[in-house]
Amino acid sequence: MFTLNRTKAASETAQSVMELGPLCAFGPVTDALVTVGRAAAVPSASARLRALHESATVLEKVPLVVLAGASYGQGSSRDWAAKGPRLLGVRAVIAQSYERIHRSNLVGMGVLPLEFLPGQGAQSLHLTGHEQFALRVPEGVVLGPRVEIEAIATDDAGAERRFRVRCRIDSEPEMEYYRSGGILPFVLKRMAGAPGT
Image (cartoon, rainbow, N blue to C red; front, side):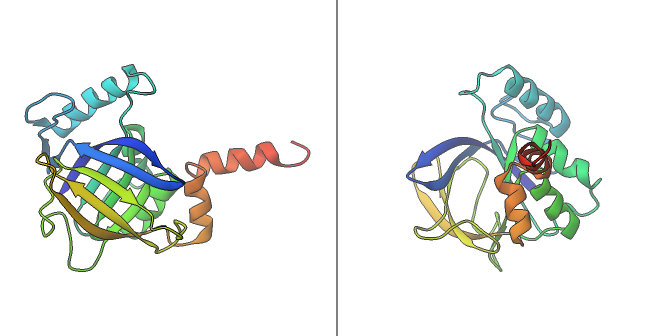
């Protein structure tokens, strides 16, 4: 089971903050609030969201986050399982656990893999996908391998639910890929800055 959430980029001091909002999916059907306002098949809703994203101005573009269960990415078609969501605007995934290669592929596409703490998940935290979320790196902490950050879910009534998630960028080289926006931008930046190129 997974949930897609609409997000709005925000900036508070030098901390990394994302505000996330509603668009949820369970299995093959989503209630695609952003794209269609009613239940729809995920591929259909994804196509409509992509069309909306492509037609939007830079200020209107809305990044996405995925809330996922255990073994997220298991049985996937590997790199396209990370490329597809990235091309649809997914910028972060919060899962109970990851299939090893898929987690690495997400980082390679510039998607931030986050993990619920043990015993937690979208269901146990009563997350519906209709909340606004803020992800905050604690003051004095630099986002890096295995760092815990705070997630704040705010429902439509304004009630907040706070919980911690762990960054699943597992090495410094992966952190460099992520900070560059993925492995391809990382390589291109290095080539552009290399002497003799």
